[in-house]
Image 1 (cartoon, rainbow, N blue to C red):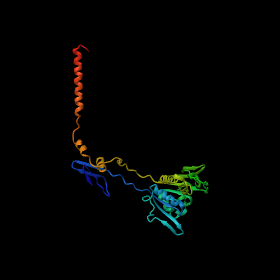
Image 2: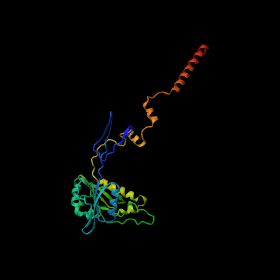
Image 3: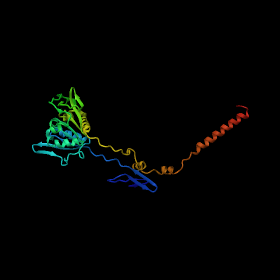
Image 4: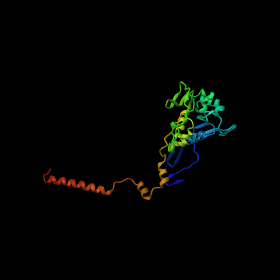
Length: 295
């Protein structure tokens, strides 16, 4: 659409920068870089944990694909699940031993620079055990909640991490027990998680439970994700054509403003007359004092 002293161009798809010429005037604007969603492959049996973990990661901006065995020989699977490679995924999250048949592919994925977050029975799979910083131990029940209580991460059931490797980095402890640990595997990263049934934190954590559960899992998965090259783009937090945007939102200038903008700026007449009168008065006073011999 075109308006007085301005114009607006709307396009469904634009490639590269935008350059507009009107007579001798030229305007240009650079487009922001496209944001590629970070992708996660979620593996776990049907239950509250996989359901709410998928919801939390999706809410945090991750693109989640999942395979969820629901019965022997029956699995709910994303149609675009495979192939498993670093061109399509950043991280694999394996919650239990249902990841067994994909374990060799996961090992290759991590060796090629992908990330792995594993908990529960997934840490016992032979193909994954050699990648992970630790495996989970015996389950310790969580705190019993009383009426009106809200759950925190400390109150969750925990499988303390055991057989911790020498090159592992402890990320979180609960008392003397290790709850989360990480390590580098070639160009990839792996994380072992000892917390069990984290969905309880989301559901029973009070007003902040949902947000805290989402932020914690998103941060943890992000730690396992590979570092992508970041391109330095021009700043887009300022308007490339502020006058056009102003006219688009508020309309063209009024008649009085348009006339004023077309004239050169001049000093008002009245202040100049007053300045001349004051100068004459001062000269007259000085002359009068000198004629009287006063200084």
